[in-house]
Amino acid sequence: MKVYDIAVIPGDGTGPDVVAEGIKVLNAASEKFGFELNYTQFDFGGERYLKTGKILDDSEVEELRKFKAIFLGAIGHPDVKPGVLEKGILLKLRFALDQYINLRPVKLYEGIETPIKNKGPKDIDFVVVRENTEGLYAGAGGFLKQGTPDEVAIQESINTRKGVERCIRYSFEYAKLKGRKKVTLVGKTNVLTFAFDLWKRTFDEVAKEYPNITADYAHVDATTMWFVKNPEWFDVLVTDNMFGDIITDLGAMIQGGMGVAAGGNINPEGSSMFEPIGGSAPKYTGMGVINPIAAIMATQMLLDYIGEKEAASLVEKAVMDTILKMESMNAGKMGYSTNEIGNLVKTYIEKA
Image (cartoon, rainbow, N blue to C red; front, side, top):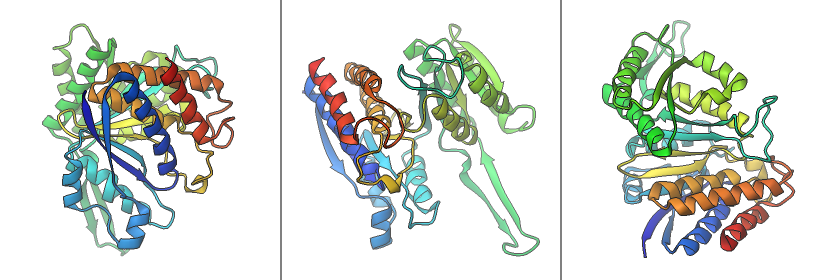
């Protein structure tokens, strides 16, 4: 029997609520397909920070490095200044564990409404590959004369050939593996003439190695328009850290909202982390009204990543079946409680 060690970070707010449903589904899948999952929980998040002043130290990062996969609920606490936990936990893990890919499937399922008129599931099914450890989020820059009328703030975008190439290559390999036909580089070559000159040159060079995949380019501002007007144009998109952060939130909205959107922070050779992309939604904590579908889809991505492809496929089918029974993707309007939705997915897997 195959055994996988999984780190679990329930986190803040409704994070523990949706993680519980994700683990319920993981357990059903593991029992169905005959593999074992061993979970180790970590209490990183706002409550620990408020009690102890600790965010995430280097020894804890090293502990997480031992796990091939990490399941994260949510990070964010109303009593902690914005940015403290996000930088101290999420960004620190991405950089320290070299999770250089942020993978965001954008797929509209039957039974979910999109705000885009006359578009359906056949039109919205693409994946965004976002560079996750460089760009403007690398933290390069600083202040001059801070707090004075002459203050200067500089934030630099760091783009290395290595970082850019491995991200682009991942997008083409992903397209090849998943049977997708086109990779679109999203940038701003007409204005960001240094950073995206590097991106475009590298993209063109790597694309030559994949003659069966169409290589395309789109400016980021045009991409946001086409996400709304013609989402069917896209298959796999690859872009830098900042642009990826922005367009994936738009992608979440056209696929039905944060209640269904999941993502992975991936190091193909190391430890990767999977999570629902919505926030901790603290006002709903413990109420049983938050939608766990995004967290369950994060477990689907986790299963695919560790190599349990059949289990991942069945979890997606179970989610698709469950969505058709739900009244809405919005918290408190789903027609079922958080726990009941998890049970519906679990039951489908058990009976399949």
